[in-house]
Image (tube, rainbow, N blue to C red; front, side, top):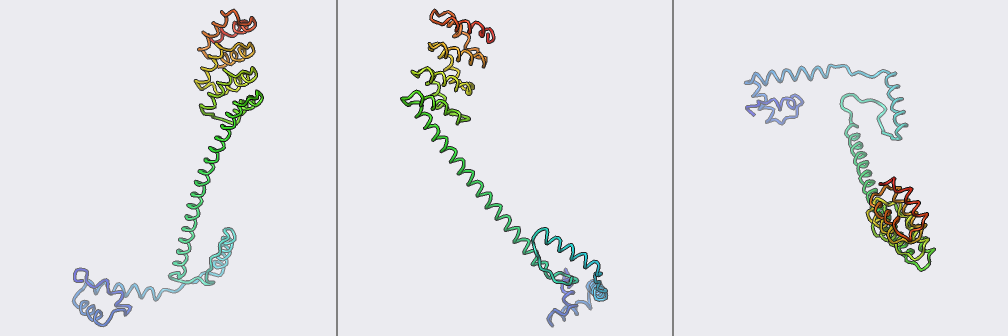
Length: 265
């Protein structure tokens, strides 16, 4: 206390909050310490100025405007905060409660947002799982249909590819197999046309090139030729030239090749 003097005790000394021992110590110190005595005099002047200051009351117009604005704010936000009808001077006793309410509201909002986010993440996970399950069911149905004994069912299975935006390699390979090896001409043709949407796959390109070498049906040959020319596949040049040389290639197929081949060479 010697280093800091008794300045920390002076406000309580003036308010009469010190016990007898502390009060006597302060008074004894003040007789010897000019710094603390000057500090005490400054405090006395300050406190007297507070006591002498006239308490200002807001005008009736100001009060009216304030309560009108407050009522409008409550109606806009549907939140009612109870206030005393009179504005108290000095410290506002309701301020701590207001801060507590604000903190509680903020905590409630944060908890709600956190819970909402967790629910959204859970819903997203569940939706993703349902989508995966749905795709698996569709894939199983498609593959099953393409293995059906009925040609019309196999065609139905081939056309089921429309249900997939990004089919996996299993489905693509199954379609290629239908195009190359199905015993029914209509199934092979339908598969060839269905594969056109997935020519970015090397499996599809290889299947089309293989079809040029093995397919005997002129209608399917022309369909495959048109697809390969459409996508400007350079790998098709040699197989097309070989078709031109084969004796069993139909004349109208050769004519078709001759008219289209220059566009990809």
